[in-house]
Length: 193
Image 1: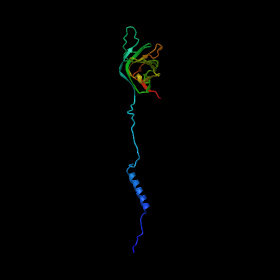
Image 2: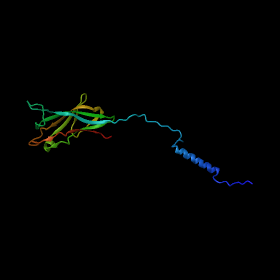
Image 3: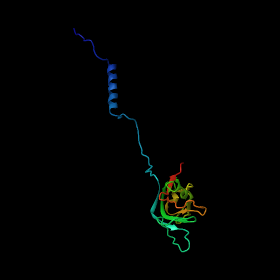
């Protein structure tokens, strides 16, 4: 008589389920080797470059007396010459403006906040700046009243900074005083959009 041993272990269904789970785990271990169709592409845009907004002076500049009295030289030396009411002295210097950018709009101004010295003379002095560029209209700037600059205005300008002690200064106002003009400068600031 043949004896049959009782069946032990898993049924065919259970074995099939384990095999299916094992196959899924193997595929998952292949890091996406079971992916569906896919593709990729790069942007054809190329390189994006930023613009530039700078201003710089060139050289030391030249001082000139704009209205010397008869027989006096038009040369002006701030170390030895003194200013009196009615005088207009000028510092001439080249200024280079770099302004690149399709939508660049900036304010160009004269900064007099660095002027130091005696208050009466400082308050009495009037300052104007004229920038001249070949082929362009002159740009006239008074401190606190900026002019608009765009990329079309870039280039080298001949700058003429005029310091005037007007005839309206009377009596002993601003006599025997001094101011340091070495910190008068230009500011160039992009306008907010």
